[in-house]
Image (cartoon, rainbow, N blue to C red; front, side):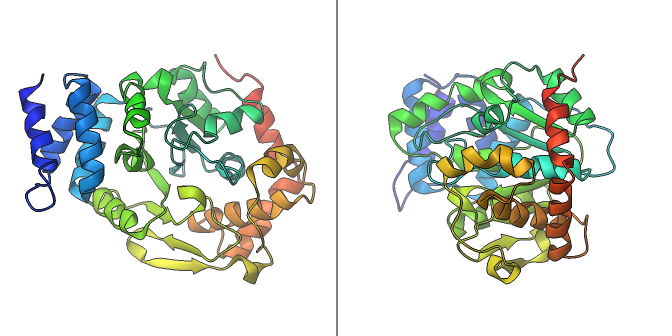
Amino acid sequence: MSQEFREFVRKIGSGVHTHQDLTRSEMRRAMTLMLTQEATPAQIGAFLIAHRIKRPTGEELAGMLDAYAEWGPQLPAIETTQPVVVLTQPYDGRDRTLPLSPLTALVLASAGFPVLQHGGERMPTKEGLPLVAVWQALGIDWRPYSLAQVHQLLATIGLGFVYVPRHFPQAEALVPYRREIGKRPPLATLELLWVPYQGSYHLMAGYVHPPTEQIMREALTARGVTAFTTVKGLEGSCDLPQSRTGIVGLGAEGRCLLKPQEYGLGGADVSLTEGMTQMTAVLRGEPVPLRHALLWNAGFYLWRLGAVASLEAGIHQTATLLDSQTVRQRLEQLTGGHLY
């Protein structure tokens, strides 16, 4: 038993009136003791459920990110004129709507913006479809690649994926606790903010509940991150909805409301089953329902990243990239084995 970790459990688990928030340095140490398994399984489980009940602070999340930066993989910076775009999604996946960000990533990479994603396999508590499975359906299996190979693909093709079970086994070892405690711990929020990259980047992070977005902002600000976008997206992802007004945080620039119906792209969100069958067709430029979702999302992100002067122009550029087969060709480059 770790006496040091026992004190952290006591602080956050003492009840509504007597609990104490951890400092950033204390949270970094607590996260380190969990990643290194110096804390016992009983202590780790107790900490994770107590932390969920208490709710994390922005300072605590910053400390957790500090530990991930120390113990997790970090891809070296690549030579690029644009920041690497990091598109995140809850690790426990999606069970209602299609994870659109791999297709969005292909469009952004085709427009000159390298994109990095990360995640693992199906995970409690949701056990939804993970990003790695969507990529596999597109023809690219990220699981066997080393970090050096991921780095090379990011540098040459503009796409990369950090596969946590292979590249960050210390974090993967904490996954079983989610099933055993039956609730998402604050690790789930940490994963939305983690960037395993050493160079300049722009983080795109989704959320469900507005209080979570405020905590995320506080954590990122504490760590000196200024290039970030928060999205009240589909199932906690950074995928913009078509069925409702999108609420988007533009870092220090404030917020904006995005109404897809004003651009002729409103409607029902593409279901998981329907979307998985349409991915190949949309890359061929066919007018399937998934096309509108991709135009809406990629168009917004091109605008947000400064590639175009307006959202309308971003939608138009996305359509051009799809219809010219540029996006499909980018995928073919990725699946063509451009590795040393």
